[in-house]
Length: 188
Image (cartoon, rainbow, N blue to C red; front, side, top):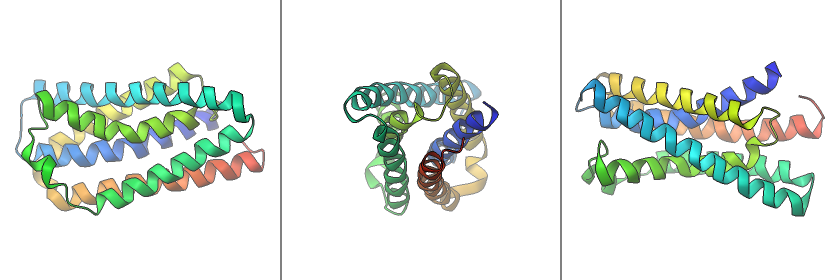
């Protein structure tokens, strides 16, 4: 079970780097502790919700395609990772016009960030950790990453924001490949 928890932590860490990256960008202008917590909770809730939706889709697909569903889920992790890496290298001019700290901007940001969690939800069923434990780990890591990103955003600036998003994507892609290999070799 320890190796499986480590897998969930790696996934949560990869997802949280994306959240961290956006939080750094938002945190550049500074805000109250209460606002940081609200943003962190919103991001964590969106991540967990999308994972649950992805898991439900994964279960439905698993009934139709059997043992190959795990490989498809891991391929989804890889694809989401590649997508995150590509997106980290493009400018998002529209997001700079929205206030990502409240209202419509915060909802938009949390939904956009949690789309990668939909793909993760599809594969998280095959990691070997009970779903509630996985969701708690993801939510806690996401909340910590958001709070940390908002806190140090003013110091790190825009370069760190883009690098963290790229690293999160790279970590997810490598995780997808690694998990598929472990499943194929019947390890873990």
